[in-house]
Amino acid sequence: MVQFKPLLALILFSLCLIMPFTSAKSTEVHYCNKKANYPVKVSGVEIDPYPVSRGKNTTFSISASTEEPISGGKLTIDVSYFIFHVYSENHNLCAETSCPVSVGDFVISHSQELPGITPPGSYTLKMTMVDGNKKQLSCITFDFSIGFLAPESLADS
Image 1 (spheres, rainbow, N blue to C red):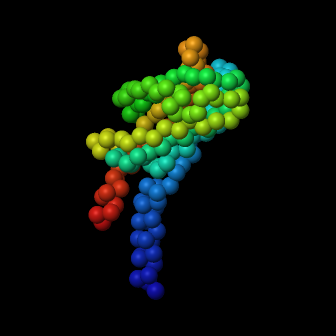
Image 2: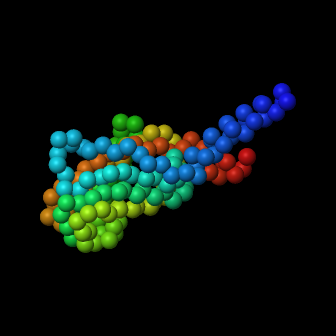
């Protein structure tokens, strides 16, 4: 019975390492300006898989609601690694959700594969949404992690 407990502990520890690569995570969202009354309210972000894996497709699903219809616009994404700005990109809003967006709930979904050379660690993503007239609709930030182990290294063990 004494030998069974270390084996069980090892199995549980191994599951703790493997499970993050196979699960999604909702992450806490913060508005860029806490006093602003953005027309688009973001209720959450789900990242799948979490933590993000290098060389694998990751989907960011942003749940939001709008107080006014949106016919088009742009998303600007800025990524920081710890405190250093490392990446920026722009997307057509209508490529990430169905346009026109009616008053009420909607989801912005973006999938991307990060290069295998992306360093592991903590990142912050800032997303700014503007309409076709460049009026700011929302601005949020959230943190995410890129795992230290690549999924391929788990398969090799």
